[in-house]
Amino acid sequence: METTTLIGFAGAALGGYFAIMNPIANTPIFLSLTTGYDEATKKAVARKSILFAFAIIAIVSFAWKFISDLFGITLPALRITGGIVIFIIGYHMLLGSGSKVHTPSDEDIEESRGARLSVAISPLGIPLLAGPGTIATAIGFAAGLELIHIIISLLAFGVICGITYLCFLSSEKIVGHLGQSGINVITRLMGLILATIGTDMILMGFGTYFHT
Image (cartoon, rainbow, N blue to C red; front, side, top):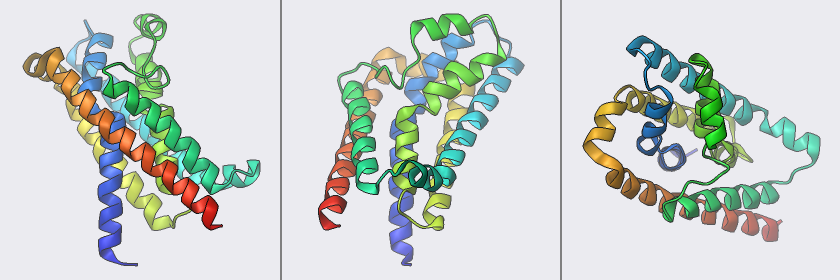
């Protein structure tokens, strides 16, 4: 397998995960959920949420072949459906509004305030970090490809998880420097990238369908 092809795949995975995770835009949510926490607790929440999200994506990436065979899900249908989900999330981000399938609701946030470390699982782990959009992206990178692609995809996701962790730890500084307007601009740019990735997955799905 050509090295340049794998490098291109790694770049696409990094870009896709960065756009769907959107660490900078998610930082204010982390900050609001951990208001009043001491630094040690904030670090524990950030670390637990990242590890939980990575575990979910790793399980989905490696188990998807079994799941698709069990339910008879075809590769074209998967790519088209996943592309639609990612496109919708990107479209909402492009308009400056969060998608309901990828953003914790006000009820989720309020319910989680009473339990400090539990916010790492919900709403931070799911749906903020490892929501439907992230899962669809991971499946799109893993489906129909070789083991090396799954490993590269998870390595790329791990890099973005590391960036997200650093953003969470520096949440107060990031929000203070960028402000809401700066975060909105970044969110719209990430939305454009996501919508493009979703469109590409849909086209790939139809191409695979008509080819087979």
